[in-house]
Amino acid sequence: MADTGAGTGPDTGPDTGPDTGPDGNGSGNGNGNGNGNGKGGRRVELSEVPETLLWNLYMRAAEARRARTVLDDPKAVELVDRIDYPFEETFGAPTPLLAQGHALRVRTFDTAVRAFLDEHPDGTVVTLAEGLETQFWRVDNGRARWLCVELPETAEVRRALLPDEDRRRTLARSALDLSWRDEVDPARGVLITAQGLLMYLRPTEVKDLIAGCAERFRGGALVFDAVPRWFSARTMRGEMRTARGYRTPPMPWGMDAGELPKVRTAHPAITDVREMPPPRGRGFYYGAVAPMMRWLPAVRNLRPTMTALARFS
Image (tube, rainbow, N blue to C red; front, side):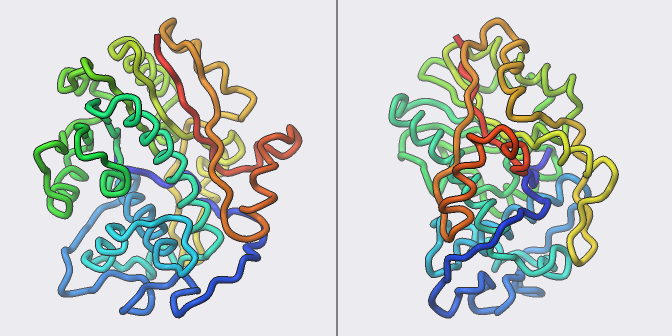
């Protein structure tokens, strides 16, 4: 699976924090619209779920270009400028609210990885279907090992744009093919991330993947995100579209916030599952409203995505 766009649907609420500087509208620096640089760039052709890795990259870069950004991600900006792909024609212009929401979700994963590396500086981070995620350049400590597990078509794109290094390599294999676990040395600690992946799987596949991680990596942990059931249902009906007509691929697996404890039933080795709240963001909505929503049962499932950490015994 490619890194996918949980949070692809439009968020609600005003982004009232004004931005300053010439890039305050979130558009691309230099080329004016956040698109790739056209004929001079590396052409990327993907479709369906794998194509969502480009949406994720586009949103991160749009937020990273802002003067008051919540995500410092120059590598994402560099990639968007290098890739020959019609970002704006496909996904529409990046809205500040949506780009910031995606970036805050990304920072939640970054927080989990940094905490792991603080405890296990020589450990291994396994990223399942991260696509063109640039987390390595944001949080790497210079010692840990990184294994990126990607479908063959996305592995080819990732290797071309982000070539493997001594401590970071890409494995061309489906996350559902649990033989990827044989490529991981668990001796110094393991953290697995599944950012924007599980919602694109069937419920039985989600359970089997989580159980497979818990069974093999005792003492490790899994960071994942989920969309609520209403969001999943809308994608299954084909109702999630951008103004330019791009349709979010179907997301068969949805989970409401109150169902989070059920994740423990996937395997006896899962000892704890808890939500990881995103950091406060810019403006009234992400600075005040969004942080409160998770505490209010009547509205907490209105959030388009939720990030959680599962620990293994």
